[in-house]
Image 1 (spheres, rainbow, N blue to C red):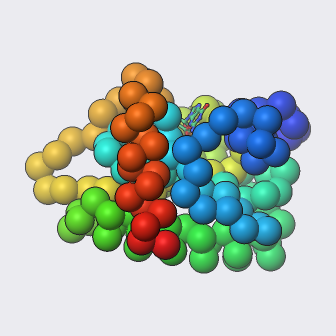
Image 2: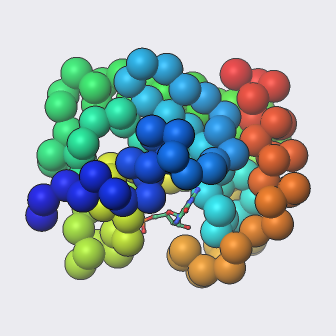
Image 3: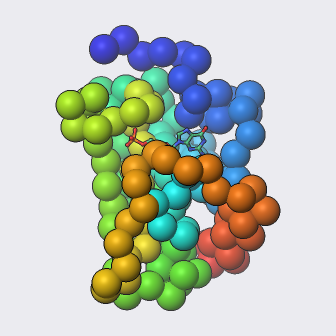
Length: 138
Ligand code: 5GP
């Protein structure tokens, strides 16, 4: 698949679409998922025109994984969750819906099921509060 410069994460990365940002550096960006499957659901993307994991520049991917690790630690501390799930989907057949590589960082609690994937927009003031909680831990 060819990378589409107008996908929503490309626009967020360029600052052309709004997001509840928690972290940004030269290589990567982290922001709240607007349709979270669980409170604290955060996305980390590389600043690379990569459709998926297989398409990403290895150096940018390496830096992005450090961001995933740091953001996961911050989400874990902010939401005081015993578990943290990192998910990453490659291709429509795998369930990918936005074709710019991204990592899902999601708090997990025993017995609490996830909400549906990419369904149900969260209240924006709540997302801002959650972004602030995570930023405090970074
Ligand atoms: P995928 O299905 O590609 O692994 O995940 C895409 C994710 O992007 C979903 O969890 C969905 O809720 C999220 N998403 C879709 N559109 C937007 C958007 O405009 N802003 C943000 N922050 N997240 C989005």
